[in-house]
Length: 487
Image 1 (cartoon, rainbow, N blue to C red):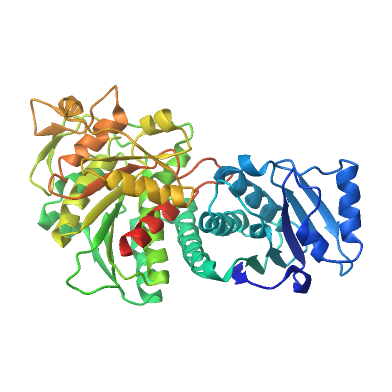
Image 2 (cartoon, rainbow, N blue to C red; image 1 turned 135 degrees about the horizontal axis):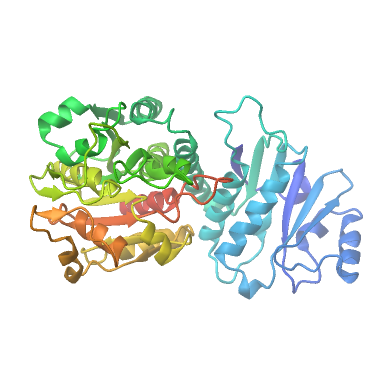
């Protein structure tokens, strides 16, 4: 679906479908009146008869004299409309539109004035919700889903001063779609080799991009013992994928993003229960997110330098798999006692984070579907951020608020570190119960002591159900963060 900005008056719009918003307290609608003909009288009659009142979640279908499909969306009370409600309203409307015969849609909901949502936020929410609703996974289907038709284009009416917001949101949407594609593909396809090949196609598609891929032999020579331990039970050899975008002076320090790329997680010798193990294909959504943010950055050609690092590894049990009780040496030289082979994400991230610091980044963020404890703490509404750098968590949180991709800070107090102590190595790879999300962050903090670093746990937000699968979160937040960093 092609998304564009339009400044065309609604009466001059020839799209197959027009989307209009209506607040519950309004007794008329300026956009419907502007359409002329008999539709204004019909709408007034519907309001009087209470066939439609503008409650949040309501929708009304009308047809004007030109035969256009008019979808009127209830927005509830103006002073109670929040970002979630606006996003859900647009998502539902576009999902409905995708099931009609309409091929072109024009959305005029932004002609409304929102009390608690800025115009900049509203524009991005409308674009992101629309793109998300229109997406469908069909990569591995012979027969396509006929319950949806093809939306060719969506024009969104905005004030001319907000064109840049449309451009930014479209890039975010492209990045989100990229992340959803990677996350939703099955693990027999989206293995470490596939991730490297996909990254190569991205580097070729956009300007100022290049790719480097380290294979398992190179990583062994370098001493990435923690990462390689996780992958040694799989026939699919690990890859370290390094995407580089140069949008600023070469002397400007890059921003580095590291994404957990466990392409399938059985738990290894500490085997997961069989029920729902298929969902462990989503354990590479951290990798998918940072690749998605890279795509959005390259599409926008932001004036920054960006390094995106993906340790792509499959965690499998066999005779060569690493075991509970093993002690491995990480790339940093620090030793790790393995107590649980299902605490593998931090094992690959610690080596990737050590490697990332060789690029001397100004900011270093890692993203991972790291702990089930994060879902217990925050559910599916917010990602968790942890850092020891003053102000960095706020920058991440603020970026999320700008695009309704929310993040909440958890502490990384030194008192939690003792849960990682062990007699047999510099640390163990799990802190046990309680505070599992925080002790995982503490583990990573031991490899980022000199960095401007934050860890973001996306276990509750990166995917949510077998029906939808990968959500593409938090690509929007990451991209907004990079836009903010670019100034």
